[in-house]
Image (cartoon, rainbow, N blue to C red; front, side, top):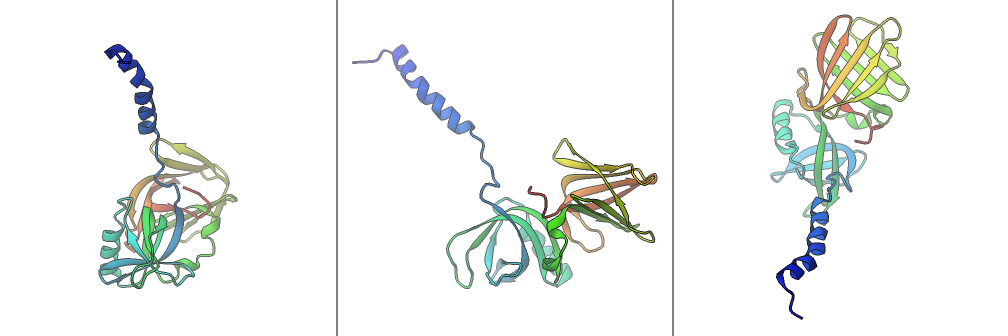
Length: 224
């Protein structure tokens, strides 16, 4: 039977609708990825990643356009020490010459010159860490509260309220112990002014009428 144009169009409508559904289905770039920490080194013109407490080596592929290859090259030139990387990535590919496969990096949380960052005993309990300089300050937040450290002062433990803000950022606020403290973090590349370390969050601390700038990163207790 020959289909007339109106009938032909009616017959194709379900097909077009199905294609539209497939086209509109969102894809999660983090699907199948894992957050990992390890050491970076260069060999044969490639950047290699060795997970903490392992001997395996993986060739780093910047699948998420994080800039990790250039960032590592710049930081290695300045520091000359081993580099520590905290990334969200996927292990792919078969073994290559002298390596155990490929690491497709989707997100860069932090990159820093360090020989002992793999041994941080508090990382898995932290939800957020932020800090800055001139003056020195540091905040560690977890499910038990947050602790504010400032140069020349005793550590200040505080309960806090966490809120999401537009653009993917967070605020941590507290009015306990006679202090009004607000910490704002936003997803933006941030360079530590003292060490050159790269962080994925820009931080701003408001306390005692001061606004202090710094950088931050999500801890191991936060899965994003």
